[in-house]
Length: 110
Image (cartoon, rainbow, N blue to C red; front, side):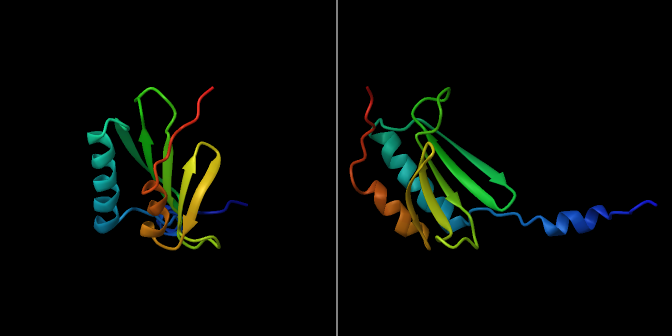
């Protein structure tokens, strides 16, 4: 027996998550302030099934310093901030999680 799958049905099941204009404006505003101060130099936006990620880099060839993820429908809130594998903040609104950047965050090396 063969099973037929309609490709249109598969595309409809995948929910595309993206940043809206207000969110993207807030992220780019924060990014531009940190670029002006010399802390950050590059960013990337990824869209994966069920999530959107704004990654921030010090140098283009390195791993991201921070990743701000939008994941709607999670129990811990729809927005999260990561530093590598560590979750630094989570909340229901983008403004809630971006308050972590109001404090002076320093990377410890050594």
